[in-house]
Amino acid sequence: MSLHKLSLIELQRKFKAGEVTAAEIVRAYSLRISQIEPKVRAFVTHTQESTSMQAESLDQKLKSWRKTMPLSGMPLAIKDNICTDGVFTTCSSRMLQNFVPPYDATVIAKLRAQDYILLGKTNLDEFAMGSSTENSAFGPSRNPWNLQCVPGGSSGGSAAAVAAEECAAALGSDTGGSIRQPAAFCGVVGLKPTYGRVSRYGLVAFASSLDQIGPITRNVSDAAFLLGAIAGHDPLDSTSIDRPVPDYMKSLQKRDLKNLRVGVPVEFFTEGLDPEVEQAVRSAIEELRHLGAEVKEVRLPRTDAAVAVYYVIATAEASSNLARFDGVKFGFRAKETKDLLELYIKTRQEGFGPEVKRRIMLGTYVLSAGYYDAYYGKAQAVRTLVCQDFEAAFKEVDLIVTPTTPTPAFRLGEKSEDPLQMYLSDVFTISVNLAGLPAISLPCGFSKAGLPIGLQLIGRGFEEETVLRAAHAYEQSAQWHQKKPTIR
Amino acid sequence: MWINQGTSRKASLWNRIQLSCGNVTMEITQQDVEKVAQLARLAVTPAEKDTFAKQLSQILKHVDKLNQYETTGVEPTSTVMGQVNVFREDVIRPSLSSDKALANAPEREADGFVVPKIVEER
Image 1 (cartoon, rainbow over the protein chains, first blue to last red):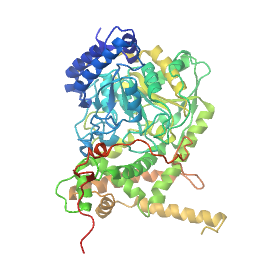
Image 2 (cartoon, rainbow over the protein chains, first blue to last red; image 1 turned 120 degrees about the vertical axis):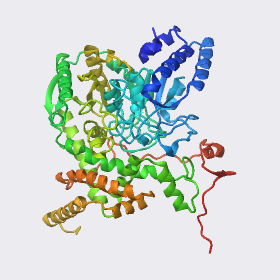
Image 3 (tube, helix red, strand yellow; image 1 turned 135 degrees about the vertical axis):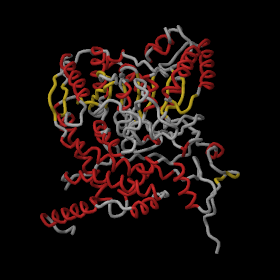
Image 4 (cartoon, chains in turn yellow, orange; image 1 turned 90 degrees about the horizontal axis):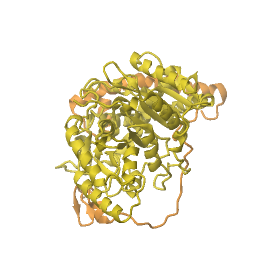
């Protein structure tokens, strides 16, 4: 059996048992990537050469001392906004095209300590700003289910690489849906942890009060496994929370959903929701009921405001975070500038793409004198209302179930000329980031055109176990994760 | 304004919201785009000025929705999971060598970053 067909946990068992070497794993994936990558273009940077050496030395080490760690030898792909010591981290931006971080993000340090294998860095919308990877300075990635469609974004490269079996699993980052939406579009599993569950140290900041790193995987068990490896408090990220990391794999053992109250927010099932998506999600809800869950309607009345709140807060934070790209200490610098001001302006003008500029401008505008209260202050207050909606709903239910996206994957170029339409496609995922909650997207069916449809399960803060348990029970009963794309 | 209680304070807040409504519905002009670009240290071409003015107006029109929500007395949210400020001892720890820290410099000289002259000659 080809190694690339195995899930993370299946591969891990084989490796641990000594049935396969790290070198064999790397060879299998190198071959797979060389066949698939010209079509899917999930990666920005390949690390094959260093990877082979890494694998060989790992095999040597294990020969003399056969003690593996959970992720030893596991071939992963990492979104290219997560810093990897000595390996390009470009954020798919001209600004960081030649940037080689001198340190590891905390999540990478954790994976490296377990001897994982880095297969490469995956494509994203520039600085994670977008929903399709079309904003990448290096060109878009493709959806493995239909190469004319977008893989979603911003973690589109990671989701496409997982769906196309170009890696065993991947990491992404999620600010307004950037893990869950591409996972839904590519028919894989994507988990955004609670804000503060995973360290953001070394994640190139977009909107600091919303960003969170999480796993993108082939099934729910793999997501639980990988989350356990990256979660935990980090003194280097003062917003990470100091509380114990549970054994997420254990939470999967319980297969029925008795005593679980599941809420269906009526606001998510309105016009604009594709009928095929609605049907698939309603069937999934029936399945949850069948598994023993008590299903009831809940209300999240301020859902309508989420996109507006998000595009004020996220752009305001981005305009501040991206001020560091000034051409002085690292990154791109424009040539032939006569003074410092011109150096800043030309560097930023030439280094950033249109969407990044648009968001910096919007963020600067909403923070500027005379508009701060009307926009930023107002958005922060409405954010409180959005949080209160979830608090009220979670008094009645333990889990909220929704579609991940209003439609399946759209075609390349379909929305790239209309930023507002692109923003509105994130309507179902954004409120979760505003409230900092954990949420997963997993496949719940396919459209007639053969595109995957995603189901979103949202939990209370730090209740990833409940989210994973319900997702796993549904997945095992529905078996959608067994379906793989034919890439052509 | 602050010492006024009850209805008069409410009224003044309401006026502020009304006022901000007025600002919000205002179209973003090319001059606005130019000014914001300057604040953000970006340059915009004449074509971009036109596109950005239209797109930002459209997005801000959507943001207008926020005014449908009454937020008088609502605490603004800046963090969600009970994060508080974290203090630590100010102790010396290992850090990047200057060579590593300078490795990504667009232009360097010895142990420093090279930038255009900042201080003007008299």
